[in-house]
Length: 256
Ligand code: 13P
Image (cartoon, rainbow, N blue to C red; front, side, top):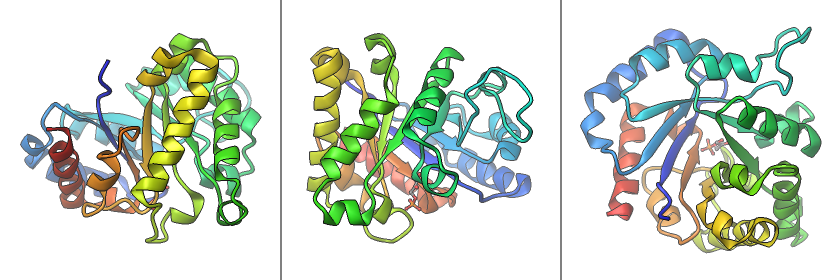
């Protein structure tokens, strides 16, 4: 089964409602360029999700950047999976490196989030990646495959097949530095191999693997052209509608 490429924006803590509306309007005017051979999503701050849902072109799905694993409860400041699902959210990030590093999220918590996202009927985007000292120590493969194994623990093969994995080297995020397409492909292939080991080659072949870390319109095609890379998770370059469309066109150019 061919994997449909996925171009996903992660806005992090950027954009007010007014700014999100302006983005959606501008993207709407260029929606013909998006086509239907690629899937798109924007993971906006919670306060922007409503305007995005109403105003984004239909090809662009709604994503959230975080979620609490419990269904409900006395967790001041948190959002439950069912709340996001009810709202029409399709994708939810779990274990972004900023959450792991700045908010102390463990592999165990990330796994609880992944399961909760799936139970609520949404698609989990499990984010993994090594930091610069791990890269220097030559343990990228061990770190990343470990995060994948922990993140997917307790899932059925069927559930795993629907998960999206985003490989984002921590040192490449927001730095202007990227992995080489060769290195990103090597890690993506290892991710697929570890999934195949546990759940079989057929399941592994269905999982979409994205690259993230300083992806821009002029480098995205080189990643998506790799065999095991099925799209990108983009921070800074997803904030501007013209740049988003340019990346969409670049991905479509590879698909064709
Ligand atoms: P940048 O594209 O800004 O490097 O961010 C990557 C990222 O963290 C997306 O989740």
